[in-house]
Image (cartoon, rainbow, N blue to C red):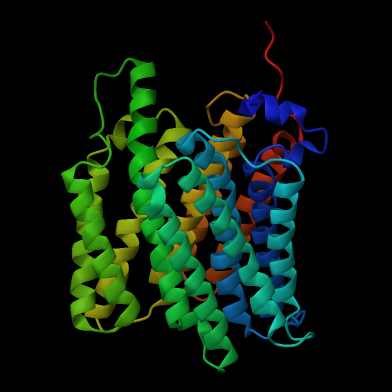
Length: 397
């Protein structure tokens, strides 16, 4: 007799950490990105030397984009895909093996200066390739073709990681290379696609529950599809020709289009519930990053790291925290509301993103940004770690 998801989870007798895909990847993804920030700040101050083949800034960029975001993507997809396809989730030792691949990648990149040069790329890329194979099998078996777009973006993200490794092996400054831009563009598109589904849906559910008659525009209307198609074109333009004036103009137009899209989702009516408004605030970094990068180019300051961090620290950091907090509460049987500790986590993240933007003018703000980032993700691990490590409470009859 076929098991349900709940029956399969209850049948697992090992650690609760491996009873659902979001648990190990959300907890250790957050813990890793907090630890990585601590290591980077220490190395930046000359307190230690990292045994990595990457230069310091490239290691920082790689681990925050491909290392951390790869973990969150795994946690999200391994939790969402069973809902999309109606198939059972990955649990138990198969999940533990996939998680071990991710851990091995983090260790291999960190100490890549010690073993042969080929080892770190092979070990690091094994994880996203394995994850992609799992997701492809589930989509094909469940005949859920509409979500092939998400798999395609994961494939582009994996290709970008490979390019990053290749550029670094050629002695290039990978932190400003094609691989990083392609990976970041794929991440922004994931936020645009997935955020465009979940933000209106969660907002509508909350407004209905609160008795508010307002409704967000339904997801994936013609306007959304046009914005997504334009986003693909503009982001590819930025990846290939980041310093052209045309690219700057296109990025400004893209920012305005995403602002218009965001305004259709009634975010201003959700201010009483941080768990909902944080999704809107996180998405706002997509147009803010596009506008900042475009205006930087038009004003003669192309390649500004501060503007780019509105996407990297702001959009990616805030959206992943928003999704991780909500998913953890919902899937561990807790109330879908954000308490004071969760709000503090969100505020630390927003402070980190804006401090990093300001570091382009006042360099001292970079350390403040790093400390706020560390506080946000260490805070998530401390506040949500107990729920992620313990079994979901059984419902009382």
